[in-house]
Each structure stands twice: as C-alpha cells, then as structure tokens.
Length: 349
Image (cartoon, rainbow, N blue to C red; front, side):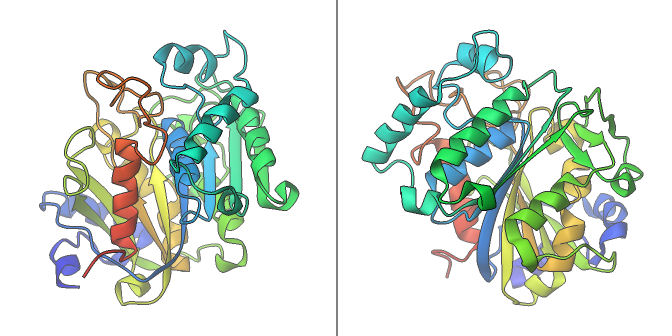
C-alpha cells in the first residue's frame, strides 16, 4: 500500500471531504492501487449512461449491476453522429428500433465482442429519467428498459425503472447534498447537472444494485478521495487524471465492492471542477458500505468539445469504418476495463 499512501489527498469523515480535497489538490496524481474487490457495478449519467451500458454489455461477466440516468438504449447511435442527435437525444427521426439494435448486438456476439447472454441475463439494472428532460428524450430511457427486459432472466425482479415527472436532465441529489453545492434546478437542469430534486439518485441506485449489502450512511464513515494517473490505461481521448474514493476499511484490506461512476457531458473535472466526484452522493454511501468508487474522466477535444464519453464513435469513426467503439474492441471501453481490472487486482503483482 506504499503507492496508495503516496497519493492520499484526504483521510477524514465524508462531510469534511470537500475542504480537505481542495487543500491537497495540487499534489501530483499517482498510480492506481489494487484492492480486494468481490462485486462490480457501473453507474452513468447521460453520455456516461450510454458508456456504462456499453461497458456492462461488453463485460457482463464482470459487471453484476448497471445504473443509468438519462440515457437511451445500447447501440443507439450505431456509429453515426446524425443518429445520436436525432434518434438518441431528440427523437425527431422517431425512436430507435430494438430489432435493428439487436441485430447489431447479435453480430458482436457472434464475433465475441460482447459478453455471453447467460451473464447478461443475471445483471441487476436501475434506470432513471426526468420527464422534463430537454436533452435526452425520456422515452429513450424506456426503450433501454424494454431492451433490458428482453435480455434479463427475470426482469420484474432484476430491473427497476424510475421516472420523475418534475425533473430535467442530470443526476438527482438529496436535499442534504444540494446544500453543499450550487445545484441545478430540478426541472430546468443545467450545470453542474446535479439536480436539486430532493432525491438521492446515487443512493437509490446503489440500494437496488447491491440489495441488502448496503445501508443508508450514518455520516461517520471515513474514506479517501485520491487522484490517479489515467495515462497508464489510455494515452489519448481521456483526461490525464482520474479520481478514486476509497473507504478506510477497503484501504486496510477488507473485501469491498467497486462502483465505476461515469460523468456526463460537461461534467468532467476539467469543466465543473471536483463537484461530481465529491457531491454525487456516492461517497457517503461508499464510506459506510465498503464500496470503492472509481471516477474515470473524459476530456473535451476538437472532436468532443463537451467532454462526453464515446457513445457514437467520435474517437474511432474518423479513421475506421464501422468502428466497434461500443464493443470489447472500443478504445474507451478497453481503457475502462483496464482500470477496473487493475483496481480489482487482475494482472497486478
């Protein structure tokens, strides 16, 4: 654990974490450490939701749970920005056809570029939408729900679909979390895309994904929020630095679960500072329930000015026809998988 100690930014109770992180944020990021991980889930918002589904479908043997906030079905864009804009955000061209997306999945399955159906059928899935969402049509979240209903062994008990009639686009946070930041109005949305809806979206998702394993935070959990070097996993297209929250019990070697938390467009640390990695609500639950939270970071670029995760092929379509960005061959999918493997101790000495 020497490497871990070298880049600790804070060791404190979670409510005091923000201040401590700001005081230590000038430290250089260090290599990512490994922990004793016994369960893995992925949570994503907007473009992070699309990427979360790509990751969960590519490697269902590894990801037992998936939570998506404000994003549509797997494979929706099919490598085309025009479809991403007109059928996967707005629905000006109508809703995507699930039969067509299933053909794409079947082709990947035949080439072993997505995980086996028996593993996919075992996942637990949590899906949330705001009915006032003007960025991603909430109907698209229902299409994702129907897609997963066709994949899961027992959808009535494995999938939870939540809709908020008053919410806009983003991740809803509790009233207590909203008091620590300048949140977006629940109905209107906007930066930092954490919605003042008095609903703990992160906590409710974790409760569904991990069932009896997690309990509501009491406020006295201890943990560390750290910066790590992402260039080890993918040099290009991602930010140089990612974040990881580690409960004290996990740092001491206890078996823990891992949750990968993927920000949405315009939500990276480069764009909104450390608001998402500190105030999503995940860290409070993590400290109480032995959950390591990995916060990978995308970055803005000429091809990706809003710092979105690649769910339409911007990173590969410019030089590769039929880019497999949403499969096991996808560059960002592979980078995220490599981070998860490292944190889980796969291939780490």
